Length: 305
Image (cartoon, rainbow, N blue to C red; front, side):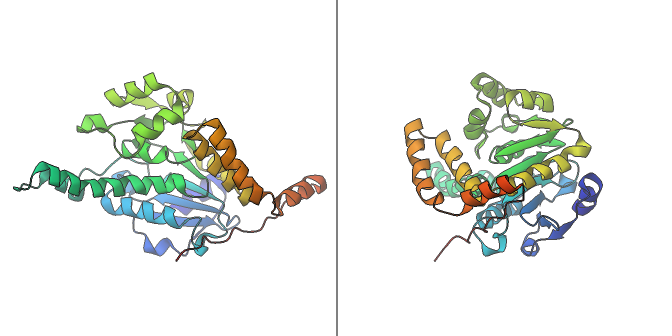
């Protein structure tokens, strides 16, 4: 179980999050001693966490709630991992609902069928975009296989660590399609090496943890036995800082990725003209001066109709 693995690797125990019961293919837990960190586990270990349609929907639903729902108000960082032997083996090609639109034979013309299918594809894209747009930083702890949709998913996270035995692949071309839920859009911006991105995307070849580190896909490679403890330690460090500052930093970094320097300066100025009026700066300075742990106010749930 996830708790057994955590007990062995980091000596920390988990408790089920109140929203865990509504998910079939995701485990949602918090650390008993650090409720500001939530651990999300892809939970189809017998399938190496290949993503079927229901899991895909659950990913989007969960990350829409994190940082927005009052159920997640104390949470300041998310750790995403895969249960079992792999992070994610890609799309579950045995799930007929993915392929039904291609297999249906009818007299309806291809334009109408194409437009009808587009909404499903957009829904799949949005599920992973929810991970990226979640107000709270998401750290991925990657092990085993991370291929196809696993690359799509992990590139939507902000920080990626992997075990030294991890194998990666942009596998979609081997299945006869172009990657269409995030890899071709996010991977070039993550690694900054257009030639290598093209090579990996055209060939579908596997690459190692060391190569992933060299290209910048991951920021750290550790032994498999240390992966969870290192990732949890990183999450706790992030969660110890002002949530207002951390969420503002994430918002600023994502905005600057897709905008000019001047537009990004204007964006962070607009954010900080409000954020700097909070008490967090004073709390941080006082904690540094007294060598005591800073205690910040929790963020409020996002308002909605």
